Length: 302
Image (cartoon, rainbow, N blue to C red; front, side, top):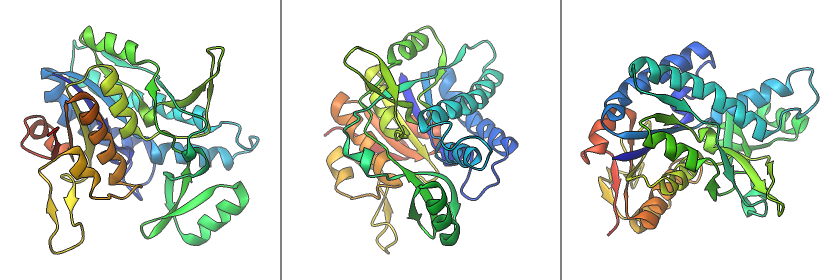
């Protein structure tokens, strides 16, 4: 079975945790240990988020003596692809001796006229207090938004149209490699009439990009891993229950939050509708049961 599996950025750097490399590397190794059985039995492509990390890199650049915005978001996304990709490929290589593992720097085509370019919604960076958030908005011109009880920076997140390196990824998987790619949704780029490309000041949602990639490479299954067991219907109410199975239409009807579960649900619904395949939202520790259809929220065509 060919599987595209999306790891969340917060799985590597939990909310509020100190952004030490050692903490993130340890989290990666725990994730890889959970995924090792899948890699041994299936064709596996791993994508990953970068929301906390790309925001921290942007903040570090802003606090330095370098000129303002010397590294735009497209470059910072590429940096996080290399950084997190190193941690994941190294852990996979250690866990799967003799199995080829490849990290691929990937770009994602977006529409520069996408309305999302003028409506920032994608959370990046650390959680902040309201006072600190206001200061950074004033000093750096960042757009800030409430994230639960805290505040975080938000950036544009246009819808992914195509992963430009999908053929490379498919070829590597076909030769037996476990591939790590589309980090942070891929580097957002636009295309020009002459066939050239230019980076965009945006961060693509990694779940939506993973769904597009999964379709392009002919994946049988899309898995979106998070820190909960699946989609909860009537969340926060006495009637709350875990959805074990849902159609794309039923999943969309729940009106899940745009800043958290919403893109995961849309990614799974879109993949199932466009391919007839299966998609699942679930917890990292249940990866094997998810593939077997015994855990997570299974999204199926009906």
